Figure 1 (tube, helix red, strand yellow):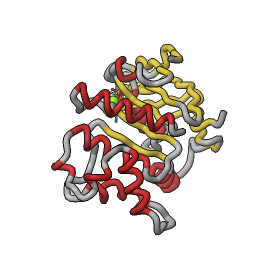
Figure 2 (figure 1 turned 45 degrees about the vertical axis):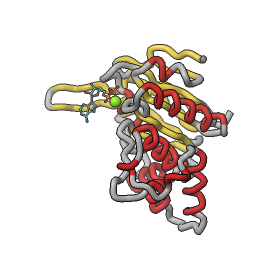
Figure 3 (figure 1 turned 60 degrees about the horizontal axis):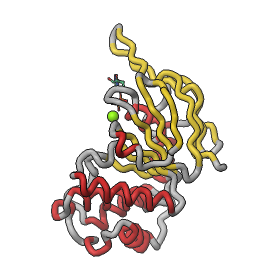
Figure 4 (figure 1 turned 180 degrees about the horizontal axis):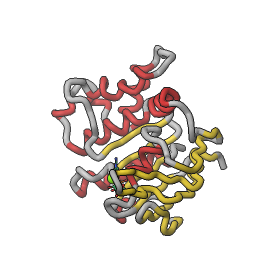
Length: 227
Ligand code: ADP
Ligand code: MG
């Protein structure tokens, strides 16, 4: 199986004056290509810290991080920015769509970071919107959409660069129960199309929709279950 991420004894320590917070306290984890897993834990357990490291937004204090078999533990901020922009698709609880841009323009945003400008980007954006069932709203503004529709657009945006992994931090946290089901159905579909998906959640019902649950507590992996 092709490995997307390999974490070995990953630690993240925050120093706050005389206080030291061990946000991640020796995490060992392998994420494979086409994995669909949930990081499940209560508030403060280190989920977002872990997501920031996997998303190349932050670096570990200690340990080793491999991405697609390459050691990325100590790469420069500039290289991290390239990985972040081109290889990871992000979905957030608050959708993070830019209100002054149309749905199509929001989906196109990650392509503006690409070094090589491709001519088929608009076509790819329309295809991404089609995959999430939002192609008919391409010219709308985010404010004209429901929460569930906004999250669909955010997922289309996460998919447009064909990333190595979709990282979603509490992606259903702002949705009503009907839309939670729809968005989780969509993630399942995206996973079955061959994508690697990691959901960060405190909600066991969300975690139960994935294939593998990694329980975290106090910056450590407590247990793991295959569903
Ligand atoms: P979760 O996402 O599971 O709620 P976090 O990863 O946000 O947990 O936080 C894990 C721990 O690290 C918490 O105790 C939190 O207070 C602490 N922490 C997170 N970010 C920082 C920071 N920038 N500075 C200091 N402490 C932090
Ligand atoms: Mg968090």
